[in-house]
Amino acid sequence: MSGLAAGSIAVLLGVMTPAAYAGDEKRDEPVELTVMTFNIWTGGGRVDFGKVPAAIEAAHADVVGMQETDANLGRVAEALGWDHVYEPMSIISRYPIIVPRQGADFVYVEVSPGRVVAVSNVHLQAYPYGPYDLRDGRSLSSVLANENTIHMNAMAGRFTSLPALAEAGVPVFLTGDFNVPSHLDWTAEVAAATPRPYDVAVAWPVSKRLGDLGFRDSYRETRPDPIADPGYTWTPGYPPPSMPADEVHDRIDFVYATGPSKTLRSDVVGEQPSPVPLPGDFNGPHTDIAVDPWPSDHRAVASTFEVTPAPRPATLTSADTTVVRGERLELEGYGARQATDWVGLFPAGYEPTQRDIACVSSGRPAWCRLADWAYLASGTQERPEDFSRGGTVAFDTSGLAPGEWAAWLMTTGRDATIVSAPFTVLDPAAQPWVKTDKTSYASGEPITVTLGNAPGGALDWLGIYPAAEAPDGSPGSLRWTYVSGLAGGTLDAGSQGTTWPLPPGAYAVHLLLDDGYTVAATATFTVTAP
Image (tube, rainbow, N blue to C red; front, side, top):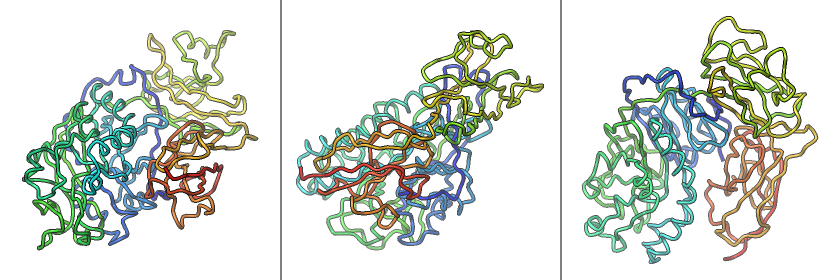
């Protein structure tokens, strides 16, 4: 489980309308951007933690999607002198990070003033691991069945959200330890060339689907021959060069790109090449940029792009998307079109229109659903003298009923709404709760959790532990996931972690606060043998 960030967490929440980019159609000249994926192996301290930031510096990376960061994501950023950290998706950047909406599966990175790219990062479930299963004699059909029910389901949201961004003209980068190879590497030609008897042509579903959606595998784009350049990222050893004789080497760490960008180069970052071939390896060494000693059991990938960034979207931001009634709700807005643009609070489900502009006049109509408002430029109901695209407003929530609300940035004209941000007002007496969709699961069966009245902190998280263990960090959780600021909703109980499937036994899923171990709510369940 990840710990408190040493860097800042830029949480800029806003739901874009079609007019969100209006008024800023000009595009910057292309910029050069290096995007890196890096699994640092249970926090990066297994070999030499200092070599983690050293590897990022050696790759000249600008944005890094990381995996297995544990409590050290902010520590890595601090060592690099970077201020921009987003813990829920394990992304660090030398440039500002903007989170578009609550629970989003991507962030924006402002690579030049007012211009952005989109970045998403994943760490898909490690087991069952297809290459190991093929080595151990499992059928290809069973391996593909696992892929279609595990990794494909985990990627389903990104298969929709990320291509939509690219279609809108936003450069998109997808990094991750996918724990699954590429169909571009598992071909009949490669199978004939390697000494491994279990190598066959495999249309791995995740990479195939990403290719069909227009994503470019940046390493294979610049190194199109998988025999001459296998580019294996798993594994240099654990720790390098230690590994069993039957290890399956493969390329499972990727930097994908789609939208307006051009791949300039892609490098594997890893250990100093061994004078003796690694057990089970093929056509090594694989490292282009060497760091000694290498700190991880994965090699990293750093890809450099020429990028045409998109205009920064309008956003309406809140550090906390859940407030207890009576607390102040603070919002930061960006994307105003004129000095008199204002922020209004409306019940969730009500989308204001041009007629709602009358609700801020002195003769407020009786039909108004507006609960409170303020000009963005002045932060008050006093008419501002000067125009500003951004500003901060704060509201007293004492007069708001507990429940779901939405803040809207409003303007005059035909397109009255610019951007919105949902938030939740809690009854001070309400208690957080969690429950699982079942009380008992077969080992390997997905575990879904619903939560309610949660505090909604950006770093609140769900952790699964043996029922008899109190969550205190030692030992760590078996599975975990951030709730991404949700006060209520349904999500996978443990999208990350080292133990899957859970063995038979009694378990508890805890809602824990602020990246720590304060328990807000608990539900118990059992796992039985399949």
